[in-house]
Image (cartoon, one colour):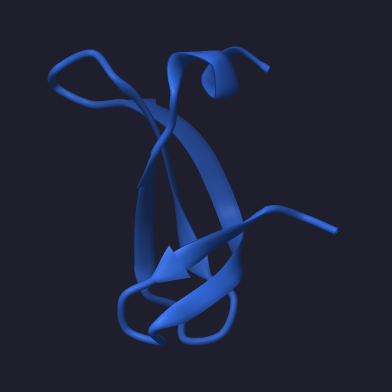
Length: 53
């Protein structure tokens, strides 16, 4: 089962599609993708340990 992230529009955790690892302006890692239910862009801030895995 894939990891699930919180979608603000759906108000629940859903799987993401078209995910990509990005780095925010402050240097922290994040995950950017589309909600598989509604298609809204979801940004999830990752810990440095999770980003390296």
